[in-house]
Length: 393
Image (cartoon, rainbow, N blue to C red; front, side):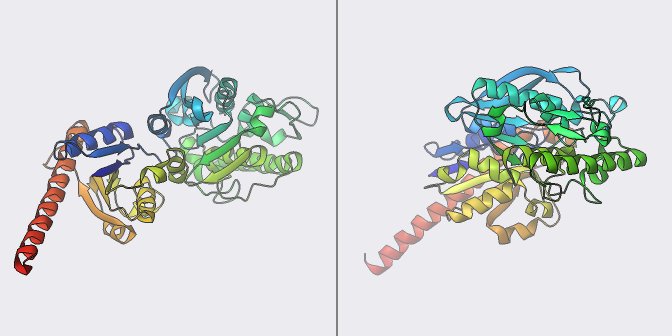
């Protein structure tokens, strides 16, 4: 039997790679000779680098960059030398988790460190990028990233702007003459489940600014600044992107990628599945095991298990999804190709214990599912024998 193991992380309990390992242990306890193909998954947010490094036999690269406040921070990204592929999470350099709430100033927060990560990967030989846009603390439209890659953002007196989104209200021109030509020629798959435009009531400043510490006045100021940025970016890049879905992702970082790079904005799980070669690995599979910490009605909105199930359906492979919690609305997933939704917590416990015991619970539950599968096989053999005897075969 061939099992493809394609879980997302179980947040605060185990990474996607650890979840795949737990699933394999459970399977092998029942089917010792089974072929288990581990393909850790993610949806473009936290865990994307780890999942793809594991799935693609890559390596972790650690380099010093600036965080959103301009402070030095050690940031990791993934690199697959054979594919010249770099896997970057924006949050590694500009993440909200790197800045204490008391230190957050969304007006001045910069994506400069993201550009430094890209530069380091280009120096290593990268020509393809997967970039996950989740978890940023910035709202600068990607201006800091462009600056790190050689662009100049100038005011009406041809002076360089300072850091942060608020400075963009003074923007007069973006000089792209010094923009790194390697970045121009590289291809970028932008993984984001955010479809917000750059501006307006659904834009970066209005929707995501308050989550990053912006008060009502800061939201208005940043909206005005990004409006200036959008106009100048369109004029100097030749691409009008402000209204495109995803332009507002990561505080407008999506807009910079769409305007200045050879990039495609795609659903996060699709980018990860493609980079991890999930479709190829599904060939000849008997079952797919997937899962994440919580599965409910929201799983329909681009979450990893749904993407995996859609891929498996194209190959006619049944999918079993495991979760720490199977919540309200999950039953709709049975119409999307899931054969079973299986909770892994088997006794009453508090949250911390459930998180700590996650790998053991997942292994045990996978083994239980496999015993049921083995029982079904045995019943099928028994029925076949009875039919043969009854017909004299």
